[in-house]
Length: 362
Image: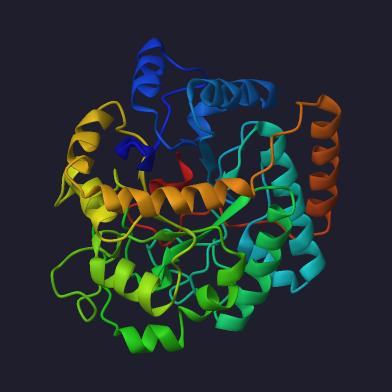
């Protein structure tokens, strides 16, 4: 396996540039991630994902953040999808199942195979500036297990891989890792009794877990964020919890929590060395060759284990169906029906977030 296969790269716009075609053909990244900047309409989006597949010698992961609410990257043509908070407020598993089913159908039609959702964070700080406003499925472990589990189950039935986030406990952060490195003063045994319970309960149904850019001094005294920490990725997630067959993905390495102390190439190497499988280069990806140069310093045995997990994940992915305007119209009708059964969604509000999180602007 090429070291470049651990990279999940962003794309600059709705179409690939000549420079991107050259870079991606040369590097052969393991996947791509789309944002609102890449999306104009359904057919254009499907053409883009088809183009990305054609560039790759092996089937790539094509990821997106379509959680609902203010984190809904297909907003240009499917706006105002209900948030986790609004769906949770109804306490109706059937509505959540419909949301997961519609999401899975939409992403499959667009040629996307990995949704970076659901959020499994407990909503410890609903009014804080930690970027999670409206994105959590509940305050208690059981609420999150029941609600996020239903959403994930129904999106996976459409062949979409689900990625839980932000391990180990993003909801404990009081500020936003897009801007700075949050420090969370909590011990490992306490989060094992609380925040990690949704991960362990849903682990058999998770295709991937995203590691947060939060620092836990009581778990790793080195000052490293969880996304670069051997103690947290290898020690806690892999060894203690047994998450050794599915994928571990970093949050975006372009975020302030990483960039204030590390360069992207160094962070990419450190995350893989700590036990991760994939690193997100969402925005500053044209210098990806520098990250590859760092990754090539690692032992080949690390990439053997990653390749095994990647192959296992890709085996359950479905081939995207042919694009159909009729299917898109059907999805739109079903979404309209779902929204009519729900109250107005206030999750797009950035009240309490100072400075406002860029999470909904990408």
